[in-house]
Amino acid sequence: MKKYVSLLAILAVALSSTATFAAQPGGVQVSIPTVTRLVKIFSGLECDLDQHIRKGDGGTIDTLLADDFEMRVGAMPGNPIPRAQWLDRYRSDNRGTAACDIRQMAVHDYDVVAVVSFLLKQDKAKKASGDIYMVDVWKKSGEGWKLAVRYASPAGSAHFLIPGAATDAPHIDKRY
Image (cartoon, rainbow, N blue to C red; front, side, top):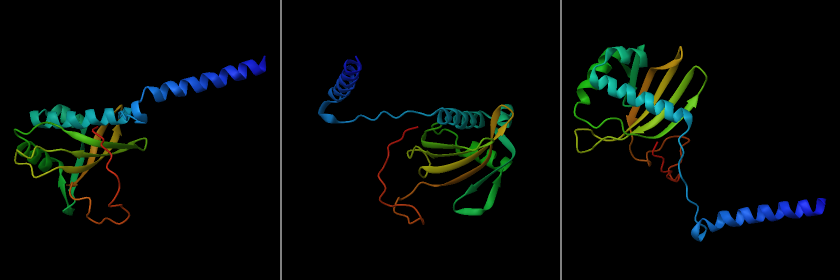
């Protein structure tokens, strides 16, 4: 009896793997990107913040943005931009531009802090100068999250030498 059950198990495994390969013509593997729970949450928070700043919705902005928020830009790392000044500039710089086109997001959760990095695509037909690489630090606030610090730099050439980074790394097309 054990021999029969073992033979049946082996046959079932063989048939299931054959069906899997048959479903993929030419042996080509199709990769369908999935969005993690945290990427979905923080994509929503990033886009909500963007939309509420554009609308001038101060009450909602206060629930998403820390009182001591600051932004630091790669070209001027020693000159933080305080919350009020950032909000004014953000509103005026983003009038008439397309809303929130976030790609290649990664979220690193450290319990009460989440580090979120992403590529912000900008419409080059507008006055935007190019895509921006963002790193946002979100802090847990009650049941929600507040953006504490934003680091931003132009997303430029992959050939710019950064110690520890590979210039020949394969491109992974992540749209979330």
